[in-house]
Length: 248
Length: 313
Image (cartoon, rainbow over all chains, first blue to last red; front, top):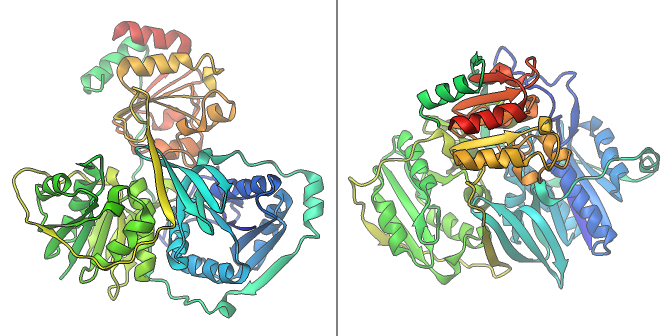
């Protein structure tokens, strides 16, 4: 079985996001970029399935500008067999990303597509579900445990009410939640090895995907700031303050 | 004029309050009708609850045995069919809605607006990105149906009781897949409130020092009826499992009271709590960034302060 993994590059989770004063976007110049944390979890899960002998090949997929190559090399260093780079100058919205993945799915015929449940930049939480719909295959979102056997995936999902277990016939789309696994660290020799692994480059325009995005972002604003509160001198003063607000 | 279809979320035959919150958002669109769609195996009790929500024009029901459990692959084709004639489809932005709504949007061939915080106009919305560190205004194409998930924490539940909307069975001709099956739902066995929805949360950080020491956090939380959370540092150090992690990559929460104990306040943690009502910080380092956003700060040793707090309650 082959596994496709979505591997998006985002602003690192430790960066303090600054909205540009003119409201046209957030500051990304000179800001540290990293793999979307949920995508690292997706890749780790795919690698573990390969190590268990469930899958033979793990392919990381990125959509973005020419310099995305370095990011995809990290995915290869982590252990993916090869990478597909769909070259697109601009960021694509989830529906467009799902349509791109569908084209790749038709070409690659994977048994499983694993994506992060959301990217920590646009926080859309859509691409996996949209791909599953367009592909007309099962989706198992917010996965915290995945077992593959007998042509189906048994997936434990983190839902508001608790843990839901579903069965999905393969091929299927799985999106990862935080608890699924702890991604491995990249070791230096793996970085060297990754240099010789293949990255296929596909021009976005050659896929025949409609590039029209339905949503227009017209303004960016910083969230309302919390004002600095007061320092209390001891436990008694804290309890009194909280009781006065009806919180204790 | 806008017609809005709100998808009801329910569990165990009861309507979830997220539905009435989505109705509030639908009301803000100022359209001509708000219909609530109930998909279930047994719809009557849920539909009669939905019919009492103020602002609801009609409750539409689809009763099928396949709808016994909320599987997106089963529900989405029915919702997509039912959406015909509506300008908007609103779904609560809970794990239920986040799972099913994008599948509906893709079947309709339209984009989705996730986590709507405010409705500026019928096709203009505000939503958070970067875990709420930026708020964007998005305009949806007026030529297409708007599929949106509604961020529960941003909307009050619409009032109930005064109204009684008609309930109508809806015939939906949709082929349903059999490739996805429900196995079971394991609901939290603990008596402790759920971290995501609790009104009070007590979180511990690296300052707690060890897995054993974390007992003091659990005991204090139980004392005040709070859920327990943790910083990423505490999770990475192995003090508690990652389902307790609060922050950008963990859970983003908005309780009425949040108590951060031994948490310095890394950006990734602050991002997860900035919508909390009142934030209390207890830390031995008076320079910790957590004090910048805390409503009440107390500098000192948590192992001395927590027993003092307990004795005062």
